[in-house]
Length: 85
Image 1 (tube, helix red, strand yellow):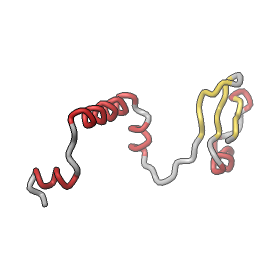
Image 2 (image 1 turned 90 degrees about the vertical axis):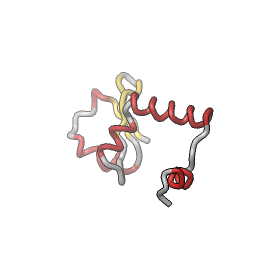
Image 3 (image 1 turned 180 degrees about the vertical axis):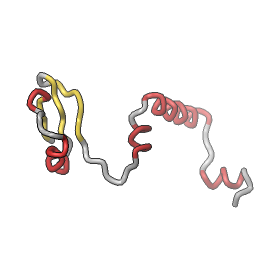
Image 4 (image 1 turned 60 degrees about the horizontal axis):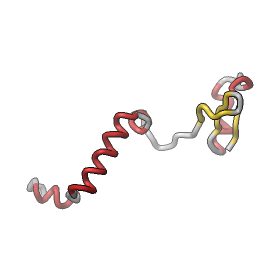
């Protein structure tokens, strides 16, 4: 992993791509991490957007907690319940 101080990150973003291909590049502001450049492979914009959306992440966490407390159906059980087998 490489770090790059924001005050010295003056090149166009495309010039950092070879470094990012080797691993994440953490951008720092006075030595403190503030952002990261990471290579995205085999993902779409919707996946990136949802995976960083706090409301969506909270919804998923709530759903997992409820499933642990109340139980849930497997995909096969759900298809059977809906008559889709």
